[in-house]
Amino acid sequence: MDTGDTAWVLTSAALVLLMTPGLAFFYGGMVRSKSVLNMMMMSLGAMGVVGVLWVLFGYSAAFGSDVGGGLLGKPFEAFGLSGLLGKESLFGTIPTTVFVAFQAMFAIITVALISGAIADRARFGPWLLFAGLWATIVYFPVAHWVFDFDVKDADGNVTSAGGWIANKLLAIDFAGGTAVHINAGAAGLALAIVLGKRVGWPKDRMKPHSLPLVVLGAGLLWFGWFGFNAGSALAANTTAGVTFINTTVATCTAMLAWLLVERVRDGHATTLGAASGVVAGLVAITPSCSSVTPVGAIAIGAITGALCALAVSLKYRFGFDDSLDVVGVHLVGGLSGTILIGFFASDAAPAAVNGLFYGGGVDQLWRQAVGAVAVMLYSFVLSLGLGYLVKFTVGFRADEEAEVSGVDEAEHAETAYEFGGFSGSRGAGKVSAAAGASAVLEGSKS
Image (cartoon, rainbow, N blue to C red; front, side):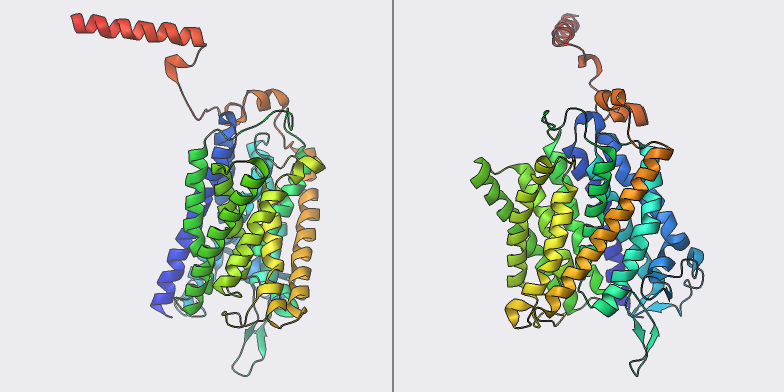
């Protein structure tokens, strides 16, 4: 065990956990004020459900002994983390429990990301049911495909087989472009179809109620993302340093590219666009941060930032109500970042693979494309089925009255903002203000 590596991965796990409350702020600010609590609760609820499932059987399903040719680990091999708690249980240079904790945070935020596609209209209880089913049937197997690498002995013989994308296809996904972002984006598209359009969409302009919350959330996401990407090195080493730098420059460039598209297309560079560009850049560099140089990271950030800025309008063209652009940012950004590895990968980076632009031909490119499409189709089809299962058994969508009046009140018996005596009509507000001023005056006289 290396104590420096252990400390870094524990810190990174905490950073990644912070991303989920950050996502709650980001999504919460983007919705209308009458549904902000429901939106934030979907992120918090994902933390509760997935955290418990991960310890019970999720870790084993993702990283247990392989069954089925790289498709799934044994779900109950380490039920409740049995056998992993001793000092002798190591994952590389860190305790296995530290790796368990780190990967748990990935599972949590992946599920939480989906919720943005169904903002303003989902019931909380059915969402928790879907979250548990989806984590079990979709995320845990895909995490096995992508993140579980073969364990080999000193002679190079495989002693414990891992997932098919990581070990047979040899696609590169350093920190979750496929397992997290394409996976969640495809699920978001499926749920947007299952739940249908919000009342009044797209005719009514459903503007974000609090851009400061959006910026706060984007900042927390960016901060936490260093644990997401650099922490995936699982060591305090050169790879962590390279991925940290690539995460920074790709995100900066993506934000600028998004703002440029807005400026040319709409005449204004917006605060919402800046925050969305930040997230698009973080998504794109997630799979590629170990395989490109900083110049390659800048190129990936620029391309993806512009693509996502254009892609968010696809929902209007095709008629699916992806409320907070999970498809336009996470699915499109994840596809872009994953596939562009096939073009910009350089053997100067830690992954030591050359893409098309560095003399490597199309070998890595086709591998990236197959991995991305496989995860997208698997997630979309199963998410669609799980969404309809929840819809037709317990009901998924809030009724129209609750949606119009606000799902916060209907689902949680709470409202985000209380205005006291000033919550009535404009005239009543004037009367209350006048009465208050009169009271102050009388008090000063006495």
